Image (cartoon, rainbow, N blue to C red; front, side, top):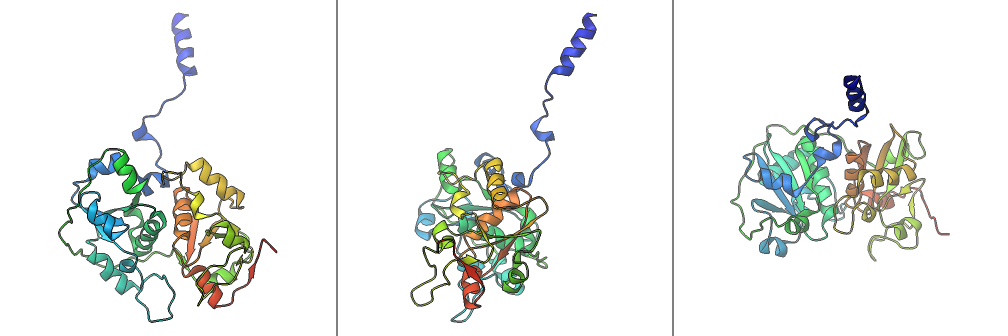
Length: 302
C-alpha cells in the first residue's frame, strides 16, 4: 500500500525537463547571451562583427570583434540610387570575405550604443547570403557585455580575408511589385516598422530635397521597431513580441512583409518575427522606393 502511495505521489509531481533536452526555438539560435559568447570567444571559426560608431569601437569593443559599417555590407550604387540596398551576389561575396567570413564561420553581430537596427540589418544581410543558420545577435549588445562584467579592449584584430566558395543566396527580400501584388491578400500582412507618427501621417519621412509620401502603404499595420526591445536594448520576451504580431493581425501560417524608411529599421521587425518562427520578408528600399514609384498610401490621421 505504501509503495502504491509513493508511486501515485511521484506521478503527481511536475515533469522537469533538463535545459539541454528542451526543444530549441528559433530565438535560441538567433540570440546569444553574454555568457554564451564568453564561453565561445576563442572558438576557431567564430567571427565577431561590431556594428557601431567608429570612435566608440576605437575605445572599446568585445575582444576579437571587427568594426563593420553599413557601407561595408550595402550596394555601391550611382548617384540617385536608393539609400540602402542589398548588393548583388558577387559584390556581397567580396564584402563578406573582407570581414573574415568563410563557409564554416559562426558569426555573432554585436551592436554599440543605440545601434540595434543597424546590427539587425547586418543579420538580415547575412541571412540573405545564406548564413542565416550560422548568424546570431548578441542580446543587449556591447552595453550588456559590459554590464555583465565581461572584458573589453581597444586592440584591433589583425586583418583576415575569409574564403566563401559560393554564396547560397536565400530570399528574405522582396520588391515593390511583390508588395503591390500582395496588398490586402489573405495570408500576407504588410507591417510598417516606422514610428507611429510616420505611419499615421503626422510626420513625413525622407529629406527636404527628396521627401517621401505621407502616410503608410495601403493596408499596412504598424509595429514600430522601437517597441521591440526593452530599455536596456535586450529583446523583449517572446510572449510580448507574439502579442504585438497578434495585434497586427498576424495569424499562424501568415507571411509578414516588413518595411520602414529605407530598409534598416524594418530589419528589427524581421529579426523579432524570425525569433517567433514567423515567415517574414523585407521590402528593401522600403518607403523611399515606394514613394519614388508612387505606390498607394493612406493616412490614419486625416
